[in-house]
Length: 212
Image (cartoon, rainbow, N blue to C red; front, side):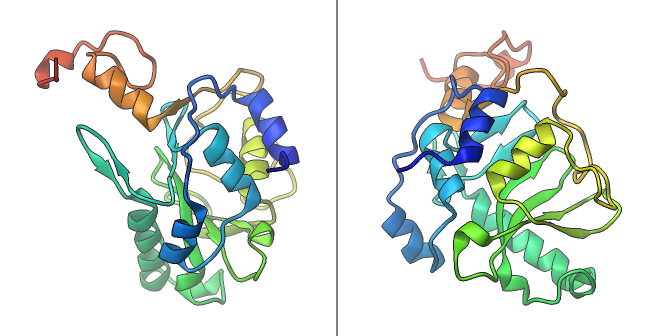
């Protein structure tokens, strides 16, 4: 797969040292979702995988994650949530599309759902839609792909947009390297009594049973 230009930039802003190639069967993904996925997202899954950004945002796998302690089907769940919010809270005022055109790829600690607007036949032309919890607008479209959107977040490059910062809570610090922790590494840390995001000892670890 040819390296996506914004993936190269993203790797500089967020080193993938705790990432992991998901080795996803993209034919199976297309069968489940009925569509191909954007090239930058596919590259993200090969470089980082599914996991946490700075402990305050998550990027989903297109297929369920089965762990030793929990299972995760967040893409399906948060896609349903975004579509429900669109139906219940006047999404058509911002997006004159069918709610099934929303497909979630991530979420923030501020309860924002990060989606694609899948109206274009070419997935590489899908813009990002933020279903914001505490943003000025409930739904806002940004004319960038996922990787460029994350790069712009980390570099605070959303000048010219009426809503300013596109998410409800800042989970990065400009000029400071961002961290990504794959879901499997987070689970390994948790089972070892460590904080899943930092790898430091967790004072509450003894509250939970762990496998030997």
